[in-house]
Length: 186
Image 1: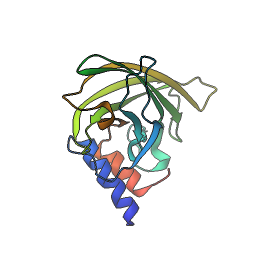
Image 2: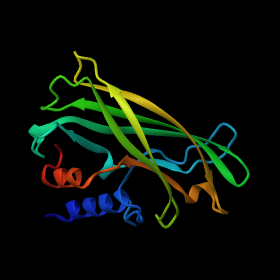
Image 3: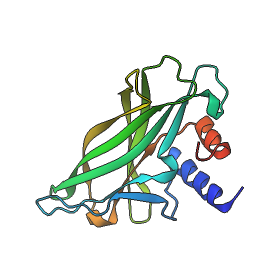
Image 4: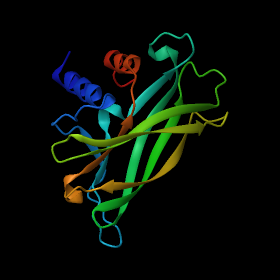
């Protein structure tokens, strides 16, 4: 297994649990250091690349590409903030896409779950919440997406908003981690 694959699995393992984020920065930036019209800086909001995709298998199907009923993709995250004294009120718009897989059958929707975590300058997870989404895919379409709107208040605890990051990824079960270890890039 290559060094890149090991690094990706290390990042997946850490964020799928509640440990710390790897100190190597495997993030894809979506909105670096956004600021609100009021001038309040936002923590950077990013999609964690190793956790930007997930798979949902058909009931009883093998954990191989042919057994995937749906894929999920975290496409983008946009953050806007307002300062609230010792906290920041963040408004996030997260774009989540559902795509039919080879084993989709007659399924017309997929339920996915992603997380939003706030990390400190040392990449330690300060808070983490999961969010379920339901994506309806029209019968004549291969994929569909939604924009999930979230509002959160982030206590700064004496830190600057620039010392924090908002990271987004799919909460991965062990069989999904194993699937992507064996079938990288779908």
